[in-house]
Length: 113
Length: 114
Image (cartoon, rainbow over all chains, first blue to last red; front, side, top):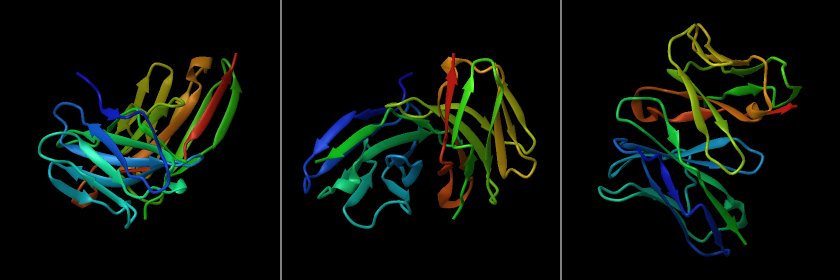
């Protein structure tokens, strides 16, 4: 049973470019969460999605950031016009329909140059 | 806004010593999870505690959930160099739109010297 798969593992973007981070949840999991871990900081919640629905995006910056979890395919976290401050590790987690346990992927390390 | 205060932030001990990491909040959580994170990797779930007062053991690790479900502790007995890593506590809430959303503590960086 494969775990949460994130790709790419490492992503380098120039300022102003777009970054797309992908996450495939564990089999049987219908809840996806995105977290950001800035250097020297803890994990911060960004957004919670179920298939085709954004449930809670209270941790998502209002501009440039968006997330989706389509009926088919992985969840996507999209960052438009990246800036240096977006450099961080972005983690995706998934959980089953009725359960609190969240299982994390290995993360995507975004570096903006 | 819910907050989880984790302490200590850094812990450096010798092999064989015991240690306790604390996770405290003024908020009630439906469950609390402990994770361990290696450099360059994602957090790996160690345990979930759900019931107030619950104690769970995982080999040399003992996890406790406070009676009021606001705090938790992780105790490691006879620490080994392989225990070195970042330990994170995270609280979850059931119900409403925050179901399953985790609030993380800042983490404890544990170093066990041989």
